[in-house]
Image (tube, rainbow, N blue to C red; front, top):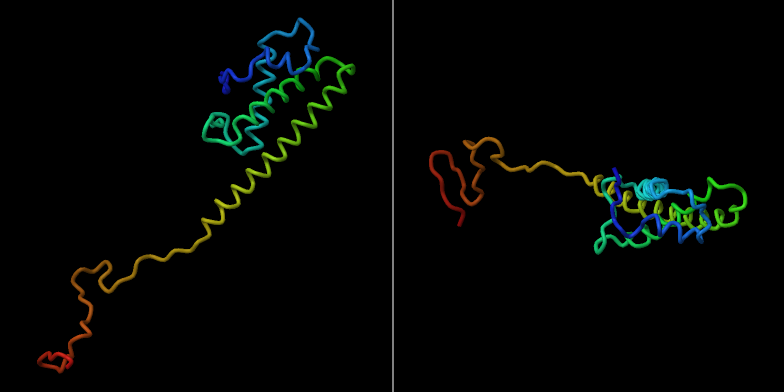
Length: 153
């Protein structure tokens, strides 16, 4: 199952992001796995589930996360091919990790606000006849003199 079926990031994009350094034996299926790994990292950093992706037009994180998903996938793809790619891997890793840190910070700020709203204490509704419809509250406009009721003038 591919969680990020958005055509914004695909295997050819990953090849381009690596600077076309990947060997020709790297298949598209292998690159899709790298894309999914980067997508999972981004979703974890944002404290979101895999089936709750950022949405274009409503989430400000959508386009930056797609760009960083591509960078993360390129980094993961290059890691398997030896020390000659260490410079490019370090460059991609630094950019990807910086983005993940910013995303985690943003997610923790949102969570803190949501949790603080739950700390508001509430009391149940109180009234004279709450739960007892036969009890009538006293009328303070009238004076009870024992056998008859008079108005306060």
